[in-house]
Image (cartoon, rainbow, N blue to C red; front, side, top):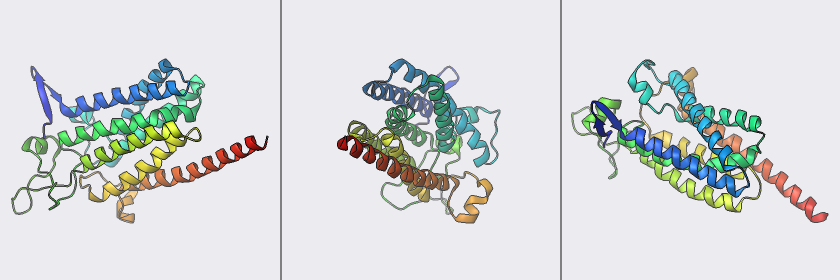
Length: 271
């Protein structure tokens, strides 16, 4: 893995930060293109996107304080860390809702434009996690198991040796999610072209990502704390509980919106 691309003097340029920045730019560009297809103003979408990114970063850091143990807020590692994804999702979503109301834009159309971009951002963001060595998986004997470098261990604490001192190979959970979200990105682009009702793409993203994240969590092994004793009580991680709630809530909302859309179509045909 290559946690560091190069240095400018003594200042390191980290692979994670570069990939995250590229992912955010591509996500914003994708959202603007899809919004224009739905007749929304590109300029306003760029404004929304930049503020949503800031809200997402803030949310990811806040949830990180609750989920992870011994977080040093006044440290370079805290600033460089991407935080906790679901915190970013919630923070970005709340920011988006507030600004959409402020700008008086159609919420579901905006959400449909942003959803594929978010999936694309995750593709590169998880590649960044892989390069840094964070968000690692459980030990595995599978042929695609990954042995991280000493530099990755120093930066993130990713284990590199087993109890017997032999090289330790881990599930590349970062790549699992990255490749899964690439498929989701393609699916959402297709769905945006074929959607039957506004909100279909955004809600589909919530359902699919919730399922993907829930499954991947079974082989993740990085320590992330236990909010309100959720893991101790249920055997599921905090992220798994959030993923289940997002997927279940999204599924209920999807079928309600689809039923309403079908009803509107039938009324239109009768008239």
